[in-house]
Length: 379
Ligand code: SF4
Image 1 (tube, rainbow, N blue to C red):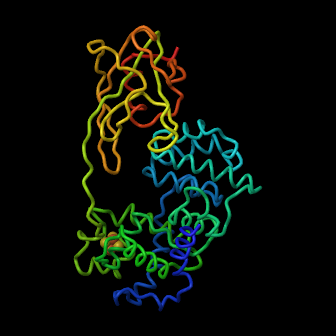
Image 2 (image 1 turned 90 degrees about the horizontal axis):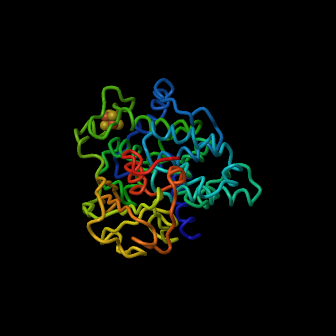
Image 3 (image 1 turned 180 degrees about the horizontal axis):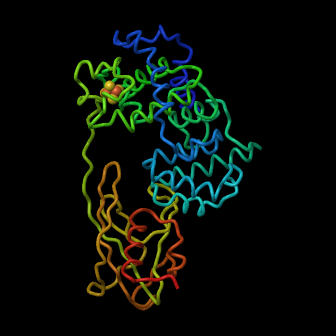
């Protein structure tokens, strides 16, 4: 609760400030503070069309914003449309099974986000709500809703003047203000959020946030920004000082380490063996093909591995995590369950079921290999 209150104060603080009160080491100019109107004008003529932009339904905007944190807009559009066919309303989502929700989310990664969507929908349904709350603090209290998502939903769906500071917005505002501080640290973020809030026209905060998103995605690109096309070029300090390639600044991050391991497909009489993961931690509660890649996955298999020599390699699958780049060799063992291998705490599934199960990334890619190579089929 304390964390929520702190977050609420952080993102709401700018709103009680007068624009003139916002200071950032003397770098803000009067012209820059009025540039928000120019950006809105640009947005009117240049905004991208997406299925979630045809609605003011807070539920739909919430789902789209969470999906957009996982993937690019073009891919998110497919997921969004499929999701809305399955769960068109908050009530439909609240009634869904976790397996159904995870299946709809499959491929987007960070499955905790999908679980949180379901938890939040159920909590709201228990409170008798058929849509999301309009208050910022109530949005922030929902499972999985952080400052960005709350601000995006609050501004786009409910017209609250709160800045939605995502990676695109950080890049745009770090360049506008020529910010020398890292944008992935609290101090830098707060400066940008305050500045963005001060620049935001109060009559169309949702459009302003979406205009910043679109500007960052189409004009103020990471490597090749199109400054001549930018509605903010006259007030961009980085353009003036020729520091664009150096902005934004990020804090030093450790490089991710490469690790290799094996993923085992045990096949018996047209079925393959899946184990269930622990209910906490990575891919909690998912079923998957057993795999091992220390130090990421120290866990030993819940069954003795088959005798060496009775397997074939189907190829390699890869996954990336914040700290690791994982490569797993997919090994197929064919034999007879019980005689050649006798896993406990695991179950055998046929191709038809395997095709529809939500699986973590490595197992999903291994499943694609199995179907592509005809190892297993949907009968
Ligand atoms: S002028 Fe260039 S660097 Fe500055 S905000 Fe516009 S596109 Fe980005």
